[in-house]
Length: 187
Ligand code: MN
Image (cartoon, rainbow, N blue to C red; front, side):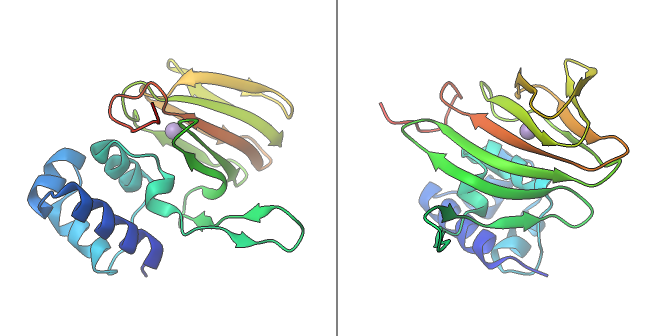
């Protein structure tokens, strides 16, 4: 199974960077074979692989998964939802805005689901705001309990994670790249 938007986005990103597949594999830590499969639409990357690619190219996650908005018919803009098989579901709420250096996702966890993330690019900060369900966030090695209406901000250039308890959970997840090393924010 493949994802046309991710395929096209990665092709464009790598072309714009001028990096060979070999060099792209070096900077992202994703194998040349896997990068080639994604670019040919032969493989659907995991979210962990997408984050490695984003970090390697110093790009926000939406640069890889966005396919543009479509009219919602009720005034707002609706962006895509990506269901990662066996993992979290990520809906783009606000795609990356270079003037703000930020992007916002709506993330859903199934009951008892745990998702741990490797460090993002240097300087990236995340915020989690719980919408529904009881959940915990892994920050500095500790799982911190959060209830709906509560939020937590943490350095996301460290290992971090999210897990739901008996019920599922849904939360808003903001990524701030303003001070990240290579991400281009407007001057
Ligand atoms: Mn993260």
